[in-house]
Length: 333
Image 1 (cartoon, rainbow, N blue to C red):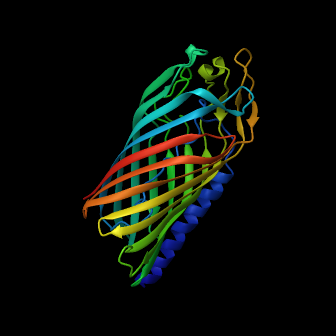
Image 2 (cartoon, rainbow, N blue to C red):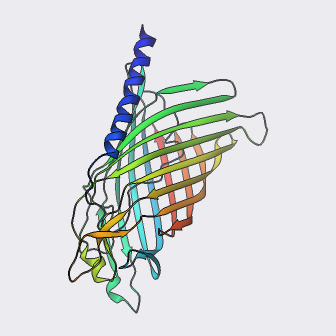
């Protein structure tokens, strides 16, 4: 009886995620991301999609650095610039798992703080600008729908949904901002495959993944700072589909290295490109961006983990050309 109820509950939760996904696909178009900064999809850690024990509290404190040298010009085309835009962000992240009705439920809260800076050049001294403070918080919910383990193989299925709350410090007079001051709904299917080996130099290989869809809501505010600098105000950066894959190689009991590859396909960008007489219009057909890089995890104790990674854009169609790095300390209680 209990197993039948558990299966029914899992089916109900999966249906809820599917319904929310369909609902997100059919929401009416609105406005978001006036500074053209794109979405708030933060690269998550390699433990984010694995199974955490029930009734566990995990804190992840991260510091990230991003830099890129391309902006959208007044024709909506991504063009390289001699100056760069940089972001230093501290991510305070909290995960709690709770056993309910025979299933482990996953709750996560992420609050970014930081500074975004656009560097001036001699030809454009007015471009220099910075913004500090809080970014848009993120809320996650997921459920460990299925988990299987054998002597040499294991996998789990972990559907989740996240919501970005537009509560950050955003200004239409700032060239750069932390976050886009937009609502985002992101249903995703995540999980992990785990292969154990008998090799002396490689104990285990694991692949964590996330694939999903981001529906962006927001506001119709115009970013005059970008327009006055011959750029555009992308007030609707378009929805996107995304994927993120980690491949971990466990070479020592307390050390593993990994590759992360992430990709985003964004659709139509709408906004404004005339400071004198702003008119809402299609700016471009969105962008495609793929980034990849490497990371290392070191487990100090069973409940303390250090993580560091570096990623670089390797392909961009009308999109960013950037560099990303992140360092984390992960503590489980």
